[in-house]
Image (cartoon, rainbow, N blue to C red; front, side, top):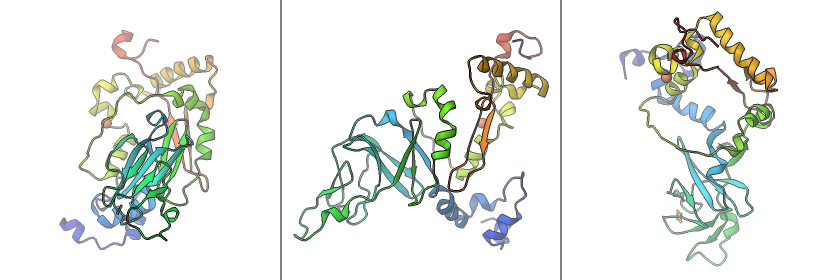
Amino acid sequence: MSAVLEGDKRSIAELIADQKPGYSLDQRFYTDPDLYELEIERIINRNWILAGHISQLPEPGDFKVLNVARESAIIVRGKSGDLQGFANVCRHRGSLVCLASAGHTDKFVCPYHGWMYDIDGNLFAARNMPDDFDMAAHSLNPVSVDVIHGLIFVCFTDAPPSLEGAKRDLAEPMAMFDFENLKVAAQKSYEIPANWKLSIENYQECYHCATAHPEYARMHTLMLDGEKRERVQGNMKAKMEACGVKDIYIDHIDTAARPGEIGYGYSRTALFDKYKTGSKDGSPVH
Ligand code: FES
Ligand SMILES: [Fe+2]
C-alpha cells in the first residue's frame, strides 16, 4: 500500500462525501479492497448484467454460464421454451454444477458427487441418499433473468429493479435496429488488469477519442467544432425524420432511474469520412 493510502484514515462514507463532482475519484476507489466489496454488494449484485442474446440459446437445453465477481449463473432454455436462470451452485455441498461456458444438454451433472438436475433445475438423481430424502426440496436456486428486445439480462439479487420502463421506452429505437433478430457474429473476451471502473469510465467518455483514436476520430463528429457538428448532426436528423423516426428517438434519451427501476441512456452520432467527402479542411461537404 502506498504511503498516501496508509495515511488515509477516512471511512468509506467520508471518502465518498469528499468526492468532487466532475473530477477523478480518489485513488482508493481503484485500490481499496473494502470499497470493492461494497461495490459488488451494492452495484454489481443489485443490478442487471447483460448476459447475451436470445439467438445464442434457440432450443430447449441450450445454455450458457455467466460469471460475475463471485457469482455464477446458468442461463438455460427450459423444457417449455422459456429462458431460466439458476445459481450455478450444487444444493449438496456447493460445488459449481456446470463447468462448461456454453453448450447444449439434457441435464446438468454436478462433477463432485454426481447429483443430476434437469434443464428446469429440478434434482432428479442423487445416489445413495436415504429413502426419505426430498429431491423436490433440492432444486437449483433460481436467479432472475429478463429479456429486453432480444438482449438477456441477469440479476443476482432476490429483488431486482424493474426493467419495464426500459422495455417500454426503448421499444421503438431498438425495433429500428431489429435487436430481437440479431445474431452474435463474433465474441472476444479481454482480461483487463485494472479495477473494473477504469474500463467503464474510459468507455463513458470520448474526450480521449480524438487524441487516442485518430482513425476512429476521422469518422466522428467529435473532431468538428460546434457549428460543423450541429450541421452534420442536423443532416442525420433530417434524414431520419424523413424516414418517419420521431425526434425523441434521434438525439438522446437519458433517464434518471425511476423508483424501483433501472436508469438507462443512449445517444446517436452521425459518422462521416472527411477524406471521402473531399473537403480541404476536413469539414463534411454533405
Ligand atoms: S456437491 Fe454436487 S453432488 Fe455433491
Ligand atoms: Fe478508447
